[in-house]
Image (spheres, rainbow, N blue to C red):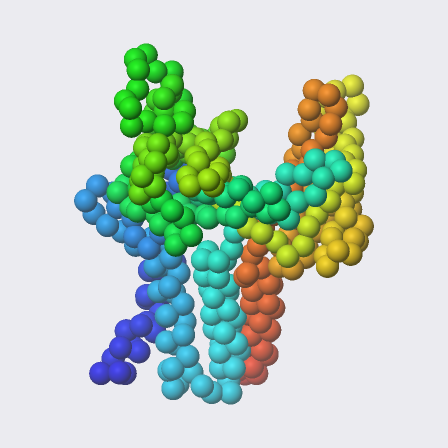
Length: 371
């Protein structure tokens, strides 16, 4: 029974079929970007286990890569493979396994975001490009703020968000990937609080460019048995934060991009840009920064083709913001890719395997040519 399973899983046909289906996913996913955008296409076809066209389910990119990995690993259990003359083939298989493991680590654990820093300021947080979170900030203490953060995965209608240190509960009523505010034409109900007294939070079509979407959330605060109980709404990027007062404590509620706190900080000392002659278009730009770790600053220059790599993160010079008053702000793209080195290492391993296989096969080739 075990041999039959290994024979089935190690079949070269399984690898070929998986590779063909992966190529189809690449074509379909690329074409669909025109209608649903890059991020939504990536989620649907490549970062999913299954997706559907109508009622019919199909395997997504993660299932396909998992099948290819199982296939290569199963091949290693074939007894006829473990021979000296096939040492090159074994090494090539090991390189392929490492490549797929790296792809899996990248897909599951890696993250992308941005760090926006004004000249003279510093930051130790990276804002995710796509994932949002609800932050409840207790600002009652003058010495520090206490954060209670709930991730986007919890934003399902009817879901309750609770914390032992919060004297109230939050119930999600609606979450919108893209929303807009419209003024109320008639008085709101008595249960509405905050900006919902004057505005309607309305869901709109998701933009193909995910960076242009403004997520919104409607939720109910209950359990405080005060006037703060009621229905609230938040939209990403709103200028006036929502606040509530419960039992003498003041809370600020904010819908924000998921923040990752770094064990170091980056301080922008000077931002420079070079313009194309006679135009207002930047030719190149760079950030002269201090990398602060354990309160020790280290000067570093980040340029468009010269990123900073530190503690598993890579910081690229992505863009900049210039205010009307002339103040400059740098925008750094921050990427943490746990599988970054795997493609390089696996390529070297597979190259060595192919070279060994060629060297082992050469005597037989010469014999055949002589005959």
